[in-house]
Amino acid sequence: MKVLGIDPGSHVTGYGIITSEDQTPHYVAHGLIKMRKNAPLHERLGKVYRGITEVIEMFQPDVLAIEKVFFAKNPRSALMLGHARGVAMLPGILKQIEIHEYSPLEIKQAVVGYGQATKQQVLEMVTRLLSIQETLTFDGADALAVGICCLQHLQGGFYKRGVM
Image (cartoon, rainbow, N blue to C red; front, side):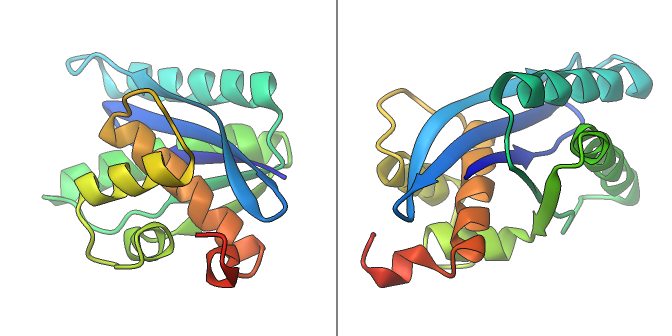
């Protein structure tokens, strides 16, 4: 099974590709879709759409997993994040890819074992779980964490069976 994990954002959207063999997650790739901060919203959303479409075409994932909107500093930020999430999911919808959504609490719990983990703890655990040698950004690590969470849920909690 190949999972595309997405950490949506209106300025930076992270994505990560992982596979599962023998109920163990394996790193494939990750990256960032970066938008100009001052670009109009429609241009930023178009870049997210095109970027996720390209990732789907390149890696052919079986499942798309995305982080749910949970909190924003203000209503405008929540609305912008909602737009980014919708546009990030659209290529998967059009390609009829199964989509799963997870809260930050669920993701942190699946990866770190603690729902209030810091971004640094998530990054370190993702690096360790996937044996990644290169430096990860928080957005890249968060996207991979979404993918790990999805695999764990779809496979009935593989970490509980001694993989971790």
